[in-house]
Image (cartoon, rainbow, N blue to C red; front, side, top):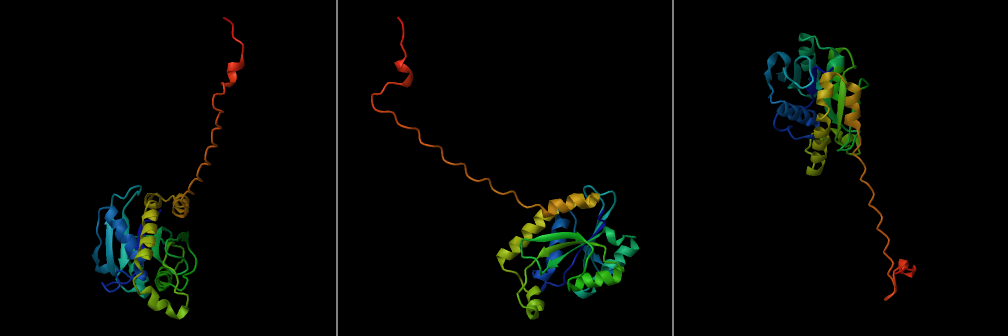
Length: 224
């Protein structure tokens, strides 16, 4: 089960609405839905919240947003995880993903870091890559040299809405994550919206009868 959810991003109002902060957006939304708010926790080098009554959870759930800047995120995560004896397999990192378009997301456990500095430092500080990841697509600028500037810019409104839609959909699996039902959570997150039903074919026109023609059953003989 998930005991610690980490949103990856950069501190400061100048980064608040940039693509690189999609992980913060996710955690902020979850915190609001759980009726809590993140507070400064200097011992863990970030903003954190302890939720004692999360639906489906058998114990407290921690929400964390490192305030160390992206490339030192692991310092914050490892500090909290070690103090509360939270294993890497019980951690979910939510982060922006260049290799997915806005409106797409992927949920998985383990793997590489894809050049993401936040994931890279988490792996180094935890000594394991076996934590869970929720990758929120932000798209790619198309040229590698432009990536650094691209992730630190605000997305246009249409892209921001597509990312918010993914946040809303994936949060519907939060209770499954807290229960530890990871396969079900993965199916819910990756489920495609149902295809619209094709329109029904139009009914064939009713053939018209000749004017004055008798109904078909009127030819039958009748007795009086």
